[in-house]
Amino acid sequence: MHLLVVNPNTTASMTATIAAAARAAAGPSTVIEAVTSTMGPASIEGYYDEALAVPGLLAEIARGERAGAAAAIIACFDDTGLDAARAMATIPVIGICEAALSLASFLARRFTVVTMSQRSLVPVAELVRRYGMEPRARVRALGIPVLELEDPASSVVAVLRGEIARALAEDHAEAIVLGCAGMADLAVALREEFGIPVVDGVGAAVKQAEALVALGLATGKRGAYARPAVKPYAGLLAGFGLEGKAVA
Picture 1: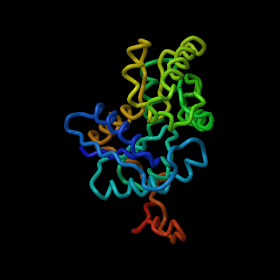
Picture 2 (picture 1 turned 45 degrees about the vertical axis):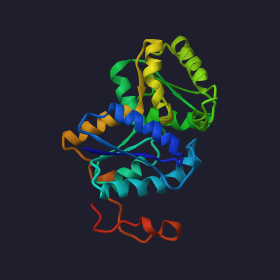
Picture 3 (picture 1 turned 60 degrees about the horizontal axis):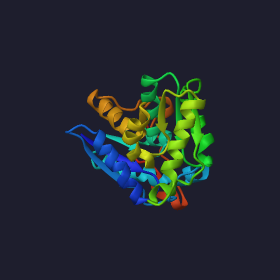
Picture 4 (picture 1 turned 90 degrees about the vertical axis):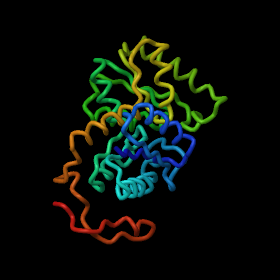
């Protein structure tokens, strides 16, 4: 099974972290192809970054599908471009936020999502609401830029540990969801330290993608995720028009 994992920001070192987590979760017959977007922001923190990351993300998913990927994973906790990707692709597309929240719901009645930047707090909270988890999940932000995860000298891990401790005490959390793909390599150590489930969305998405492929299921193409209509696209997006007959 060939799974495509797309980092929709342009920081290759973060892709390496994501790839390692994906391969650790994957079954022995699963091949993980992890790619970095070639256009867009260096990190995704809030609505502006999300919008400008989408074209590069879609280009990578389209390329991966042509190359034979059985499913695609969007490795950003904002689920950047997820609806657009599902409309475009015929293979299943999984967002790591949706994957992590659904997995956490199997493990705990109350859980806390810990994300990075304050700019991401409201977008992630809106996803929690969209996915029907608002009564069970609280969202916290460290107030630290995402790119500090790439700095070995940063205090981000210590701040994260402190925020998890507060979530356990103040939110009565029974599990923690790591709200950034760049945190993927921290899940096991934090799980052992705090003695509670700590969910990494990358690993959760890999297992869910494997399940969908094994069951022969793909995105429904009626209504919301119908293939986009054929029409001209102009300017920098001239190459994004889809060929072939639209699926109604």
